[in-house]
Image (cartoon, rainbow, N blue to C red; front, side):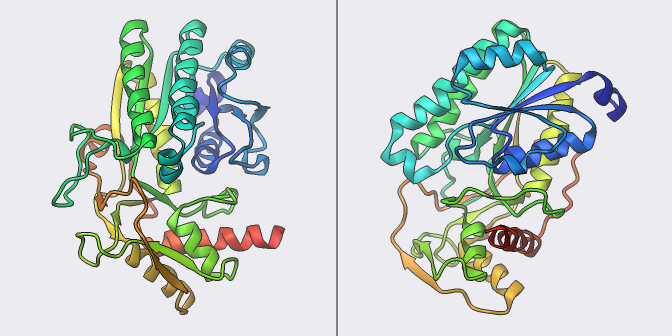
Length: 337
């Protein structure tokens, strides 16, 4: 499918397209020439992050009647489904919220997609579906799934629904399991804007520019090289590009595919903090705090399948690039007040 064909024929609906990852995917689609419809209730995103070319509908993806009208009015060829809750400790404290707003809402989305005859969907999943390996080794898409939190379980349940509904009704789907997403659009069109976001790099960046007095490091006694959690960090712009390529893949190759999204190597919490400190040449005020419920010691992606499936070449595979763009975005937000 060429960009020209996309510009002429294809509309994409993005749920949660005002949020962190959703807005970056929206910009990647806009840059490719797609016509866009964004459905978002702005509970965790901001309208200013949506590409100006997109049609914006404010509302809750869990409102099936509204979703049905949007699908009828705009007849998108495909849907990118980002809307949902993502905070692991909150899911442990309030699992009902996560099963309602992640799993149940996604069932409603699937119901309406089948009714509308939508061709394909892309689902925003997570590495939290996996059982962490005791040796900290890379996890393939076929690795054991034993979520440590209701958040991870809510996503795994949705994956199962997509698989079954797709098989029964011919809905093509790409399920992307993110590892740790970081950074911001290098052009500063969007970034992580949720005020109470729990992303490590956002918090470290806020601390670095003086928006926070200090930050907490949750647990330094894990069985990892430096005692802190290890994650596979992926720049959000590389992830957004993977979304567009994955969607085009399932539109051209009907069926379903599940892909890990990461770089295939881990970095510890302390290493991420050090990357931020190198950008500012100043030490961050870091307080050691107890472990958080639901946090795995190490999660690193086996990225063999995504590279075999998609013509995807990451452009921002560097912790300091992630830290630099994250801090630039925080400075922009601070300047906007």
